[in-house]
Length: 555
Image (cartoon, rainbow, N blue to C red; front, side):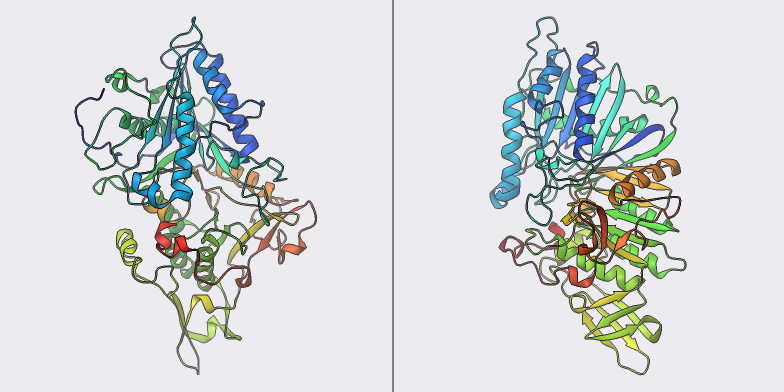
């Protein structure tokens, strides 16, 4: 049963900064899934009541996710419900058109999510003494741009109105299992050389008013279960739990902001989103805030992810590097390899070349070493980036994979020369570093979406630093605006990448004392970072048939 038609559920304006939060970085699968299970157990042990519940929202939720205690996700969720608590799940449901044309990704994730919904979506408590527990599911259709997805990762746990949020880069699937040492013994990750079964990821445990902003976004999405809207795809997939009470949404408990202030920590947090479900209410808040931080940075900028390719972020970094007193820039990505089925290594090279040109002292072109100081012209030429929608349209017909982006230089006494970025042979200078982490001879796969700006701001969330995550996928990230928290996150992160990291002696991860020139230089069973060079990257256009029909804005 559905209520009368209502307009599509749209997001509100950008969230303000909330004060009085407590935050904790959660590194990698073993710690994330332990935190998840501990929080589920905390709710299960609590006295039932209207303000005690579990709310999840993920791109992928696998019924057979194994938890540290040895059980799997489905019996754990049913156990919470059997103690008298409501458990609500949101899972991504790809649009029908996407499933038809992208069977490798969309159809596969849909099958996983539908299987989970079939296991738990109509579950009612088996405990006669606590009959109010139940599990319900929304298979959410994301009515964004064609090919888009809702990629947020949200877990909310309320006990008597006190809310805890767990957000970040990990889905609820066994792919994300690895330990903090990245031994690769947990069966997660790509599973093939050179990455083997490693996967590095990050999450944020948050208590305080910021958790209410996250719950508000979850509730906005959950409302789709109750209202049909005027779209071709609707709002809910076929595995969505049926509705018995159309008024249920309006009666759902909501955490009260004034009850969430943390007693001891006073961390400032801003929750930001990407959303393209409405052209009038379209949100690119994450990208906008990242641009602000790039412009403000005075000392250092750090990003990590499997791809760093959003043209707007790259353009802003180039502009900042050209200004007086530019910051140091480090981008942590997985080591490029020939068998990578995705074009991320190629796009990472395009960004690497542009940032290196903006920060280097010399470039090698056609075997000749060219000094920046000897040139009257030193310029990157790229396709129009006036507005993201325009870029997505023009990229369908021209400069599909940024292959026409080029570099122009004019040395004294010479002639002006323009060459493709793909033909550059080397850079000198350490202002910009692209690094890849290793554990012995095994490259560590990076799935994290984390950024650091000076010691002022840390960013943790679901948004990759790619065009789609910045412009049209559904995303959620937290901007932690607190120096002590930013330093704590920095040291925990860097210390797990490098054996012997010492922030007192040097806090910059790309410093020469932490970085090796070749992957062969990393000792067996040690952790180390390798500085990437031009020769590490593939400099040929993606040739997989599935990528010949699309362009860089789909990645």
